[in-house]
Amino acid sequence: MESTDKTDKKISLDDAVKLAVKLHREGQVDDARTLYRRILEAAPAQPDALHYLGVLQHQTGRGEEAVKLIRDAIKSNPAYREAHNNLGNVLKELGRLDEAKVAYRACLALDPKNADALNNLGTVLREQAHYQEAMSCYRQAIDVSPEHADVWHNIGSILVELERYEEAIDAYRKSISFHASNSASYRWLGYSLYRKGRLQEAVDVFREWLLFDPDNPVARHLLAASTGENIPERASDAFVEETFDKFAGSFDKILKKLEYRAPELLAEAVAALIPQQNGELMVLDAGCGTGWCGPLLRPYARHLVGVDLSRAMLEKAKGCGVYDELIEEELTGYIQTRKGVFNLIVSADTLCYFGALEEVTQASFEALKPGGLLLFSIEKIVDPQPGNTFILRPHGRYSHAENYLRDLLSTCGFDLLSIENQVLRKEAGRPVEGLIVSVRRPLQVRVEFLYPDSDQ
Image 1: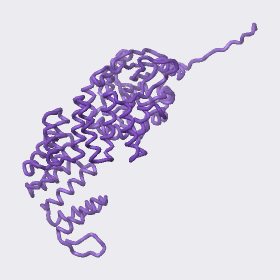
Image 2: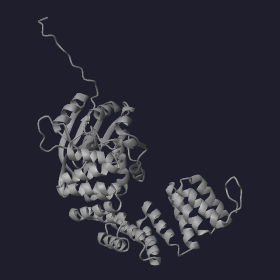
Image 3: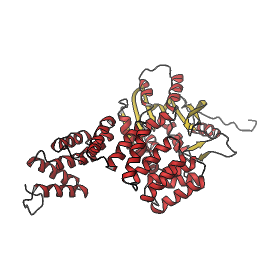
């Protein structure tokens, strides 16, 4: 075949594949795709071109095409171990976990000591809560590759889910020792230390993390949360995006385990205020995440909008099939552009990433039509001290004082309908106490009449 470069020289099929892979690795995606396709025009069953084009298509959001291409590569070369492993990776990302397990096991049938395939199979088993089988895979991978940082991190993750924090601490330290810039291991090592009450050690971990990654928004936020120094008025956009983009895949499973109740509690509060689900309202799910509130709000909505900063969470929400619009934007900024639009705004487990609530609540007031409702959940300060407004906890979320909320909502112009004490979920086996708040924008603007003190 002929090359795509300006010399127009003929090159061998093998050389063309090597060039396409080189372009691919260098990030020249369009050129690599073109060359892979030209190779397949000349040799439709060329397994490497099929395989790597499949990987490229997966990397550029074409997952189903990727599956077909990689399966064609395996048909052409059934002993293609790397293709079996990457087929598993694509299927896992598509949420087809049982098929992914079949692919990884096919790889391991050809290469029983493939540490990457053992690690990947363990990860799928962990996502399905088959912890014993997953740990067995990870231990086999460590036997093969004792310095495999990703495997040690994944062992730590299982141990955290099982609340075996001391063992998790050891696993994360090993992961970091083999990969000193492993941000995820630093984060979860700090979390595990916090769970064991070793807060100063967690602070030291976050400071060490910042030595090699000084601008990391998660490390900065968690250091502030752990020390009480340089507390931001809200979590930064970068912190929210990075946290929830990585959390999206396991978000629903983890919250179910934590007996997460905020959406249902808010739905009950909405039903008490709007008995008829007539589908006529403009509704905003503010901080929609993966869409837990969407199905609960849909019966009220003529038009249902979900807003979130995390693209990965929005992709999950899209799968609910209930939203008319899904918007990737910072919440306050979005609401400020929608004055007088909504009849109902609901926010579950979102304002716990805000400390100062003045701007977002005022924007919400202005985004509601007269008579519109705002309902939200918030974590509360259980024993507030005089002057407390909000506290950033070591886990990275904010808690708020009830009196602060009452004063703030009144100042914004809302009519307070109810504030209910509720358990929002569990954390480390303990209840997370919070508030379900319901307020209304008055039908008419309040007018205060000031009378002079004179005897006129």
